[in-house]
Image 1: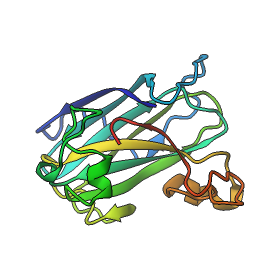
Image 2 (image 1 turned 135 degrees about the vertical axis):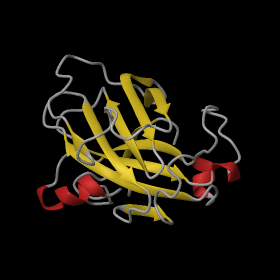
Image 3 (image 1 turned 45 degrees about the horizontal axis):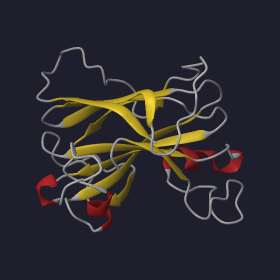
Image 4 (image 1 turned 135 degrees about the horizontal axis):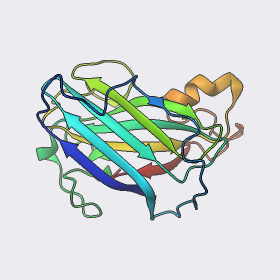
Length: 201
C-alpha cells in the first residue's frame, strides 16, 4: 500500500504560516472515525497524503495516513537521500530519483530517521506533523548523519505497522523498526514488523 498524494514546496520564507509546524512525531488521535475500507497491498490508501516544505536549515512535514487498523501501534520513518544524484532511478515511482535498491546498496547518501509513533486506540487515520533540522542527530536508525541538505535531499516516508501494543515494549514500538515482531514475540512476523505504507520506499 502507498500514500495517494505527495506535495512539496521549496524555499519557504520564515514567518509564513507553516502547515508542518508542531511537535515532532505528534499525531491526532481518533481521526477518521468514519468507516474506511482497508487498502490491499499495492493499492493507494485513499485520502492519504504527504506534504513537505523545505527551508535552508530544516524541512517541515505533514503526513496523513488512512485505512489503518484500530488498536495497532504505528511508527513513521523518513528515508532521506542527501545525494540523490547518485541514485539509479525509481522505475516503480518515476517521480522519485531514488529507490529501495539505492537504499539497500548504500547509494545516495541515505539515512533512515524515526519521526515518532502513535498507538491508534480508535479511528482509522493518523496525522503526523513536525520539523526536522539539518544536523539533528536524534533517532537516526541507519545511514550517516540524518538530514544534511534540506533543499536538495530526496525525502520519503514509511509508515510501519508494529502490531498490537505491548506494554513493556511500547516505547520501542513507537520509535524503532522491529520491537515485538521477532520470532516468538507477541507480534511475531518472522523478524520485522509490517511495512504498511510508503510513498516510494
